[in-house]
Length: 351
Image 1: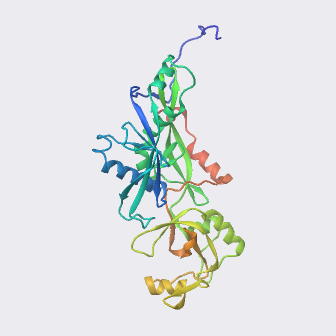
Image 2 (image 1 turned 90 degrees about the horizontal axis):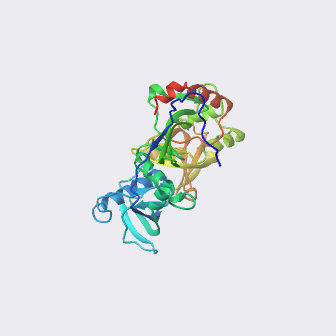
Image 3 (image 1 turned 30 degrees about the vertical axis):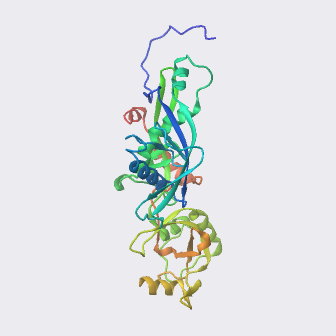
């Protein structure tokens, strides 16, 4: 038991990056599990749930809107006519850059109901037990729902792509992005929102050939006869794996996810086209009137892997907004520290 409070010295004002949150403790929040088919990336899932909510705003949600965590959980203050058995709803979107599908099926079923009054009771000291964690999860999702549709999310942080004049190159094909970290926390003053500045490394938007040059520390331009050693191909594949690339040989800049690099070069890979053998280079010349400049480089094998879709590296760009998940090099870490170290007085102006 604390014996008392100190009374010596002089009182000072403290500035904390916590903000009081207000919520209605007299509501029940309804939790629903969802599944989307066919599979699609997280940013497209958000578009689908938003379209579903907008289409049914007046009928199902009584002019309110649900919130979505980007994975499998939707929360609504309005109880939907959905039980424990999943119900299917079709949602249609215009063709997206990384999905040919226009129609998607959302399977939705009831998961739980959460009484928000239990959070207020615990915060005021009139309740018993630990803080109900699901109520804090709901508060976090409510805060991040709409910003997540506009900004790039990573964990509890949201990032905005820097303007060209404010970009900070970290080296090794990465750049610094600055964002906002948010987290709902219980406190003696009630529910508060912790807000802080966040920094992380994202891959630069760039041609895959430039990405290759940086990762393999190549100097000078490459010529038409340039090829990769197996060891270099494996290093490059390790850095490219699971990144999204966009293609520039088509009118629509479609996006694909990298599975691996082919062991054969674009000039060595062939397939049947209307009964005759054709190389990747010949196909691009016939189909797109594009002559490969670097036919001795491997191709990018994109998802889904079983479809055996191979795209020459020279027509691919790294898509912006992809967080660098590997451990940063010493050089990248050093550059990030230099760019993000700020005086306390400057930090305060951020909040």
